[in-house]
Length: 247
Image (cartoon, rainbow, N blue to C red; front, side):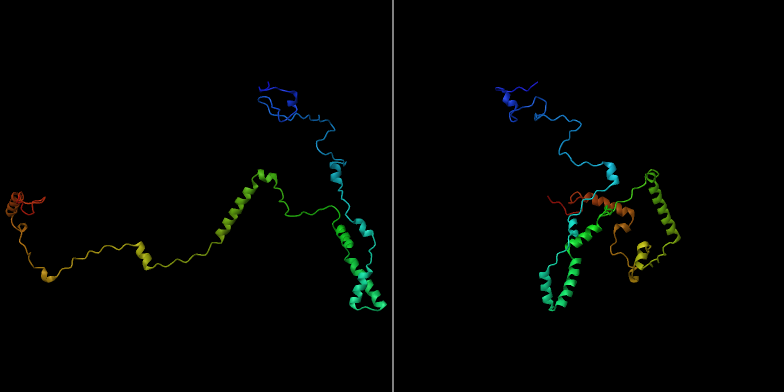
């Protein structure tokens, strides 16, 4: 079921991707036909090289020829201009000296020739590369030890071995710190001392300065309370001991 749209629908609209609208509830397709993949069909670029597969990869190791390998077969050309210039700078004049210098110069430059060094370098690195660059990988852990929890048991045995060693060789006894007066006072509390009140002997037999009703008989005390109770009505204050109220 196509989604409703307004306007005239032409057949050219189906070929124009800007005007094409997908059906309701469906995704938009590019409407480009794909080839049906057959037994010999391959997406992308086809590889033209034919090899022997896994069997050839396990049995052989194809190495590309080293660049410049044919240069080592070519004879080295002697640069007489440079050789004569260096000989004149060295102070050689006679034919015998020049002949000896040429022989020595040719032997020295032959060992430092770029083709010669390249040949030695390619011969040294030829063959199957059996070296590993960087850090080698850790050997795989055996599956039987993992299932049997051997690593945990080894750790427990090692901890028990360390514990037994520490018991056989105990640490040195640490010297105790001597107590000071501060530490002793911090731990102990002194008992309170009951000392008598300090008195002066010449004031021991002196009588009271005031002779109040507390030292009289109880009847005098009762009479004093009755007088105060009757007199406190006309005095100020909560206890009736203030000045007289004259208002």
